[in-house]
Length: 117
Image (cartoon, rainbow, N blue to C red; front, top):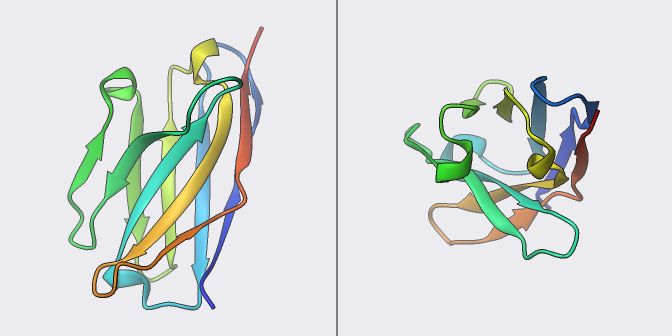
């Protein structure tokens, strides 16, 4: 059974930084594409950033230049480095893992990021 555990959320002031981590258990991690999503109060869940099994990254325009997704295959962990945080970044952040061979997708339970002065 694939399990994802997010960590690193918390309260930070505007302009500050956080590093989210997602540890993945129960799968061959290097064959999984990984993504970070977020859901703000009253809004739909949206994709923030993705990284393929080969290391190709993508992110949405609103976080370009501020957020960086990366992966460590030896540690079975994906990261989201979040810099220059804004109040509108406040949301529950979720990690998603997708097996590139069978398409199975698994979600973590989320970690809350609050950006406020």
